[in-house]
Length: 343
Image (cartoon, rainbow, N blue to C red; front, side, top):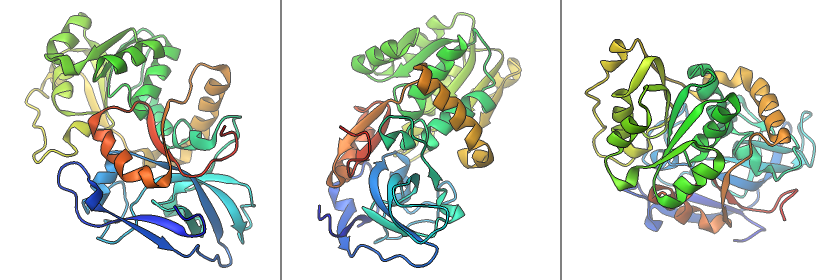
């Protein structure tokens, strides 16, 4: 990577199945010059998420415009202000927002980019993509606002070793819930037990529906869904009265040709239950409240950032492809350039 250039990853072609190297184009531009009202950001970290493949497929997701072949790939990141002609930002500020897959960005800090300053918590600023980023906020609002948890609820979380899931596990434990995490593989289940799950279920060993039924004899009070598909269907068959299902993600369907068709959603009626989707950008006015509470939990040690870090900007294509192999845990991100508190 050339540190004297703005290095970018662009879309070379639409992916078919999982992403491969041929889907990406590496490009170098001059580092942009800033105008009045702008800042220049140097990228420290970039987020990695399965939704990025959907961006590359030309779909309009989360209010973002659809991308064309040759466009820089969408993605949130953490950057350091290295030049400023903007009254609200000074050199040295660390902010997170829509950076795109590039090593520098000149920006007027528009509302659509959803930038916000990352608080100093005495830990690496990668936390701006985990607990203090949209991943952490998704976990917080999905669990508390949509899930409406109660102490001693039986909570099932799919994709529990992932970015949002691993935070929801910790939030549920702070509340005193019985937490059942679903993940793929012995290693991930061990990780979930260390994280505090009362029970960790490995869906890769087969018959996940029977396993969920066995460990929830009194039904599921709250199901936090990150994967959709078969596991969502299994949880619908095991609902307690007045239970809640939170639809956060559907990673099992992101590269499927046909969407999964639920046939048992009428169980919601039988149990007087609710199934609610949520969109983190509908909670933008409340982020300060969530950040304050998350910061307090971080300071007390009740909640910790779980980050799976890839090193180097050139690793981005392989890193994104690996997300579909299920080997990572926590929030996946790339360290582009060392920031404060990095060893």
